[in-house]
Amino acid sequence: MSTSAPAADPAVMTPAMLFNGYVGAHAFYALHELGVLRRWEEGTTKVAELAPHADEDRLVALLVTMARLGFVTLDGTTAELTPTGRELVQQQGFFTWCVGGHGDVWRQLAGLAGEGLRFGQDVRRNDGRVALGCAEADRALMRPTQDEVLGSIDFTTAVDIGCGDGSRLLELCSENPERHGIGIDISADACAMAAEQSRKRGLADRVDFVQANVIELLKSDRTFPGADLVVSIFMLHDLFASTDDHPELVRSLRRVFPDARYFLLADTAAQDEAERREQPPIFSLGFELAHSFMGVRLQARSTYEEAFEAGGLKIARREPFGAPSTWLYLLEAV
Image (cartoon, rainbow, N blue to C red; front, top):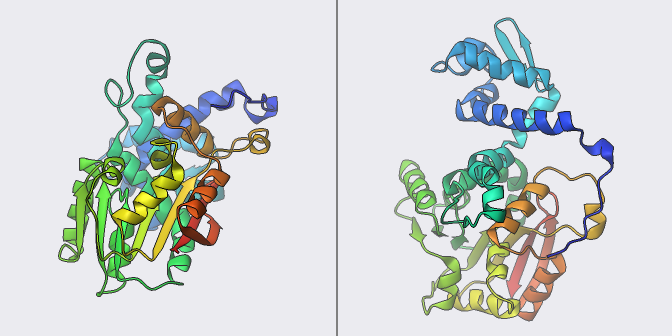
């Protein structure tokens, strides 16, 4: 783990900004949970219609907080997003991941650091909200790049490793009635969400979801023949942290999915020293802190790329992917 972290310019963050940012992030996430963001996207601006089942005085208090932070214009009976507010809504997935998914983790950092609490046992993240946040970020920030890359290849059966709520896989299969899919995720909550969405969309006969620990799966004798595309978005850091032999990990992926011609893999890499001297962008700081406490070492971009090549995968494309220090790779089996 790197211990080099030059102090940021004091202008990056003041005590008031730090405090108000914490309050604002929770107020924004509350509006998300109340369905206000969805109604804004639908064109609703009347306060009384933004969250009909909420206490109106408390809803107004949330809106006032967001207005004072510059994200909302509140005028009598109406509330509208400012240009900065619309940018915030586009990045709502990061807040679902951070506040909804990791809120309990942040509150227990001292216990995890010094009181013997154990991540995953005494302190847990909300896997369902982590999956939902990733899906929201995917739709808003990453889908156009993903769709453009996938449009350049042909495939009939896709496997999504770490499928979360299944959104990506269901979308891929709904685009083409000849496609089939298999989603794999360690979270029972995420698999349940995915299966329910599959039923609602009439895809249950073509898409299956498997609850499994992918790290253990790669060590087993199980294989998934017939899949010609393997997708894994934001799972590489967990996989690479499970072993020091990264080329062998890549070879294991090829063994478990023996007919895969293409691998579409993406993840956030550890920021380098030059990036650490700049103002922290959205997501990176929380991503790195959370994984430090989870005991998951983040990898440099070069580590991923060297392992791909050594494991028998050729880099066909590498694209920036929605979040800072995040890359999408289209890899071909050789």
